[in-house]
Image (tube, rainbow, N blue to C red; front, side, top):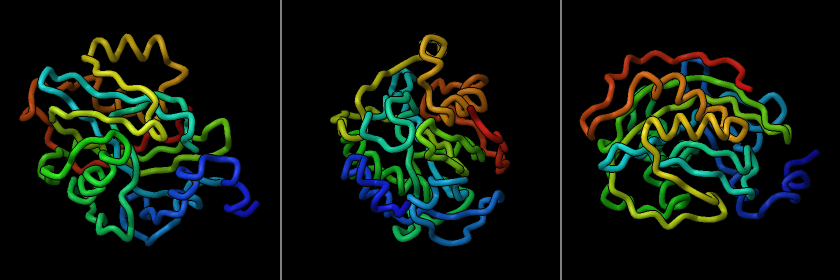
Length: 224
C-alpha cells in the first residue's frame, strides 16, 4: 500500500510529519543517509536515530507525558518528557554527543509541550546514554532506533499541544515506580527501557548530578 493511501486514515498533522527526513544509521550509530519517517517505521523498520528527553524540575521530579490518541505510533502510551527524531536536513547530525539531538529537542519541545526554548542551548542538556531497540506496535508500525537519552533540569511552563500530548505528570522516582506498576500495559517500550537501563540505579539530586557518558551503545534487542 502506498504511503499516501495508508496515511489517509490518520490525523493530517501527524501524517504530514511522516515525510520528514530521519537519520539512517548503523548499529554503531554511523550516519548512512536520510530516510523518510514513513519508511523508517513501516514493515521491518529502518534503523534511525532518535532522542528521548528527561526534563526534571527543581524538586528533581521527572516530567512524563501521555501520547495523544492522534499519534501514529504507540498512541495513548505514557512516555518520557519528549521524544522524537533529529532530522537529516536540519543540521542535527552530530554523532556521539548531545549536540545534534539537543538541537532537535530544542526544536521539538515547543511543538509538543509549548515550552519556550528560545534561551536554551545544547549545553543545557546532558547525554546520559544511547541504546538500540526495536518495538512493534499492535497497529503494525515499528520503532527501530538508536535512542539518545538526554536530561536537563529546567523550570518550564507547559502549554501542551493536544495533537501530540493528552496528559502529563511530574513524578518522583518512587512515584514513577508505582505509576509504572499500575499502568504497565500502557508504558511505551522505549520508556521502560530507559527506566530499566538508566533510572533504576540513578536519579539526579540536582542539575549538576548527571552520570558521565561512557560512549557505549546498549543493545536492548526487541522490546515487547
